[in-house]
Image (cartoon, rainbow, N blue to C red):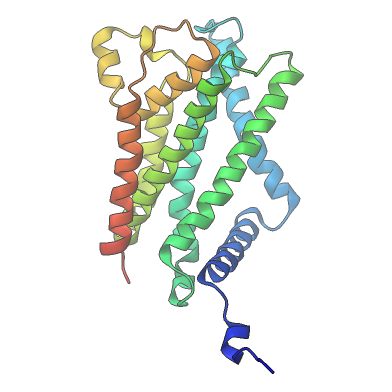
Length: 262
């Protein structure tokens, strides 16, 4: 009678263990961040809508016409989509590491697992927020479907990827310099309001526009808006954006390997 060794019956693959650890971190992340209630998820999804309503209200109050098409609401939303994705992912990955840092004392939980778990939660939240904004636009009679869906969605995905890569660097920095968590809030606010949310950067004077293009978020916003208005006088430097994404990710992973505390 052929019997398998007992160790073969209880041995689990590293992939299974990793997925179970990741699942536990994601569930803990969601419960700790949103209070374990549906209201927490609702607030998270309504934040993007609140941003759009506030900025649209400011533009309407100041009687600023939409520089792209006829809908001020769609113009603001097309800029808010990518910027909010970058903002929350890059910031919350850092906070996620700090929340789960104590768990890394367990041998099964690695530092990078805490980053992946928070990134997964933020990506899902980002797409849910995206869907809520689309429903909000439809409710006001605004068509949220871009003229070039591929261009708009690849720009949005690039914003998510940039958020993940910069978030990885943030985790490395905050692990050795905790005040960075506060400083980065100010940095990301500056980026948020200077990346063309309420204006089209391409319409700025050439000298100013050439400097603004060094900010990858400016080009990502233009990338998304090019999907809504292909006639905009915009040329995207895709290699520059990809350089930021892969360069930041490389730096962040090297910091995780050689700089972060054991």
